[in-house]
View 1 (cartoon, rainbow, N blue to C red):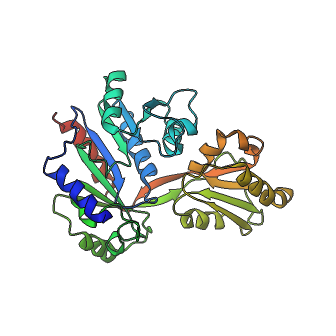
View 2 (cartoon, rainbow, N blue to C red):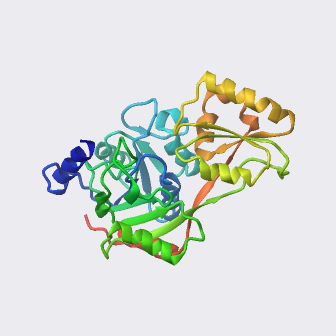
View 3 (cartoon, rainbow, N blue to C red):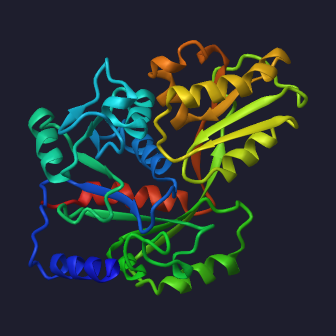
Length: 332
């Protein structure tokens, strides 16, 4: 029944029965077909790095699990609960880039253009199913570890819409790929989607950086408490295991709002680890949420995070040229 409702909704937008707003500047949408993490935030950050020194751009998100309502633009006093953890992470890393949130993206774009008429492009975060805006370029992310062609619709699977929705994408990116992915495996993945010749396909992996803020080398024997509130814990936990051979894990749900009960659980688990010279290691997304949470202020000296970036397996220059060409040749 859910799948039928989504098919009818998409049909109405495809046929123009329901209207999609179009705008006089490039609007690049990033999204996925499934619930759960496919790496949208690091890919959005990749686009920010690519474009921010060339064009005035903005990022617009709905601000999932934020405590505010309506249009909010990140400013100097913004905290994660105002705009959501992922938009706040982007604002914190790229303070010169406009970051805003609003539930209705079309209204959000209008508000951005009123405030910043100089904008030459807008990145829509997690907007593949948001049909009220017609993007000028649509990028679809698919987790290579969770093939959508073997998945089922909600609530029995993770699909937000039928796999046929891939046809709306201009660019398809298989994310979280192992860097050793073979040519045969890539071709097999592409065949499962029955893509059109004009749809570009890329493969990306995740590249972890050095532990942020830690000014000393970490011996393998140092105990670590790994705390994560993300959709897919395994890649992060595997990376932490490469840092230390003494790791304890605490898992929370994606975008988890920590409570006093959670804090006590973390404090209890941290006590023996701290006594042996250890610390808490978390994801960047979780760190920015903890940093602005009064509950965690007494623990921040013991909390560090692993930053991540997108790494293309091949075709990175081609991808960059495709994005730049789209902006340069865009016609309202």
